[in-house]
Image: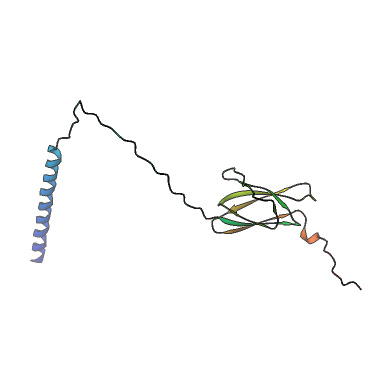
Length: 149
């Protein structure tokens, strides 16, 4: 008995939806599009575009170290090819904040002929360290701090 009632309700629903679909089809088929008259003029205005909002990029922090010490000669973004403008001379140890990307950092020390270039990946809100060794720290001569008599 319940099965028959459910079946008859389902058939009634299907019949109802079929009638609605037929009415919609007739309305769409009999609708005639509005044709502009041959003497009318239509003006289309170009949409005005507003500039996209600038979304700040979280920077990464880079610590630049060298042994015994070094001048930071240049920092170049390898992704864009742009050179980072240094506001003042940087001498190691030097902290700097950079936008995310891959960078090439060139360091020099006047006591050594060749500059050293290191590469670092900078990630947003992360810390990275670059260390250049102009000399082996294990071979460094340490000063003697003996008390004089």
